[in-house]
Length: 104
Image 1: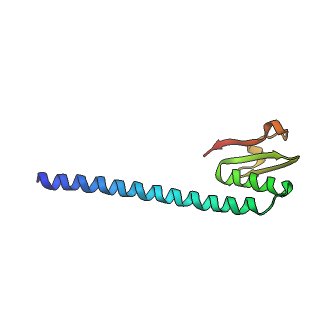
Image 2 (image 1 turned 90 degrees about the vertical axis):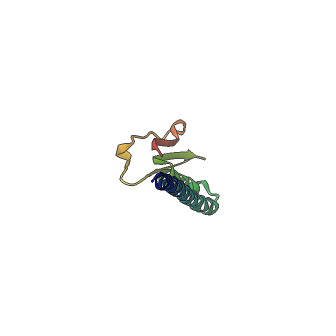
Image 3 (image 1 turned 60 degrees about the vertical axis):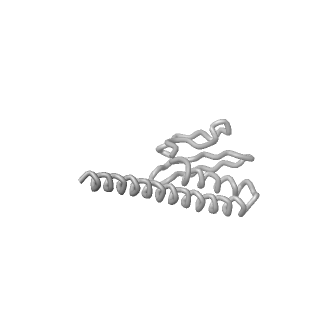
């Protein structure tokens, strides 16, 4: 009986470790996929008027519920999912640029 209990505990611990390793591997794979997308999108242009909206969209998709990006005289706002500008009253001053809202 003692032997069976010990074997069950070892099996449970091994299973938990395997599930944790699998979850970590999936998380890393997702991060690498995002990094590849980011690299591709950012390399697509060097023009600020096109780059600023790309950065805002990336920030909203991967970092926050919404983003206001102001750079090189250009402004872009992006929101994730069901969020809209009514959820985040914004001012377009450069000192207020950056991500806002609940970060992930």
